Image (cartoon, rainbow, N blue to C red; front, side, top):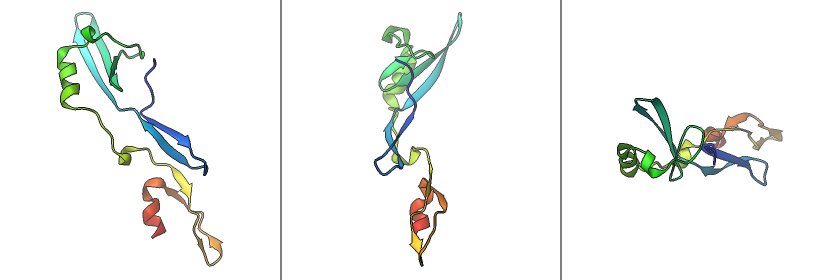
Amino acid sequence: MPIEPVHVVEVARDGQPRLARVNPLRRWVKGGEGGHEPIVWQNGRFLDDGGRELPLAAVPQYIRDDVARHVPTHTPETAPAYLRACPVVVNGVPCDRPVLSTEFEAHLV
């Protein structure tokens, strides 16, 4: 299974993009005699850089310990911002100003 996008945004019924899912992602580089090998952790699985799942025995213990100590999480504030037109009408004139989703509440005030 390939590496999934970190933020999956889908269009809601009202036509506005909404954050549907977050796939936390962590990356390490394992060095060795044969060169450097990237290791990716996503959704509880270890993958190589091409998205192929790695057997647990191929993942160094220090990387497994790091994931166990620092479980990747997210908060809604980490979602990507998007532009939307302000729907407010003042004195019969629509605002229609493009506002970042992260600033929309402040704009309405």
